[in-house]
Length: 401
Ligand SMILES: *Cc1c(COP(=O)(O)O)cnc(C)c1O
Image (cartoon, rainbow, N blue to C red; front, side, top):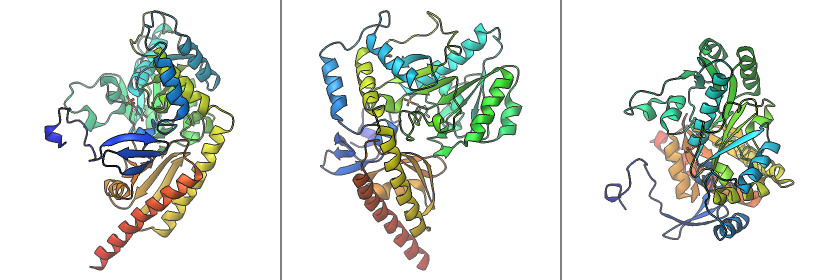
């Protein structure tokens, strides 16, 4: 259907590809083409499509109980929360339905912490250029990107932005009204920009000096994506609050705000709420995702497959330096920075029947399902190489002409 005939809001510039079904790393379109899905719904389909364990959990729960209000105790919530707590820095969890909502909870939790700690004046949050935290009014203010803020009225007050990786600017931005610092350990939408461990350690120290909370946005990097359950583990620098979503539901909408007991102390009865967040259906699927991701040896296998993929891409870069400028990222969150427009490369990959996602800084993201096998990585590399070789030939022809 052409965009103008569509009954949908015209908010997405969609690729002309009508998706119909999926299995593992494969995504099929209505016209019967089979793509290797290295987009994974932007890091959402962590276990690929139609994973048997998730299908079973969802369909079984569907016949038992879908929804009950948070006015009641929901055993699946306590179960999923206690598993997230034992696998992380956190003591407490609030469930939501999306990444932006998990961030909203994180922002509110940080402000409330300062409020109940005798610092009602501390409500400002420092964020970083290139960040992406969601599309609600508060999270577009946190992300600070002009293209997302324009035309939506006054920017929500209380967010100060500093350049990526600039410690002096960060120090200068912290003032008497600062409550917290919010950062993605690896910027996803911003172009797979990895924050060095030493920078996270410096932020942690700054938070200690000034009584600030450290908030990680791990909506894209969490739940095994980098080969660790959460990306911060590889830095050894834990936050006070963390937002999770995307891969947590494996395709079912689930978000979570994790916090230490101290950081969450202001979030008392009535301060925050949600109708759908943490309902039994969502919790059944979230628990099923963790059954797999936290199973013995799973993340180790992710790291092994990721290494093969990254080394293969590095070799591709060596052989096609005219097309590939840089490979970066951690685990199965990999960025390829081409020398041509990233959208052109994404289209060439699609023509080779492989799906990838453009990101900021002219980067292409590869986000295969965490269950991708070594054989599937090799097959993907053939498709990626075919696309890159084609672009290289075309570039040489045009420069010879
Ligand atoms: C996707 C994303 C969000 C927003 O999540 P939604 O579920 O779309 O609201 C926030 N932060 C990061 C880092 C993301 O990648």
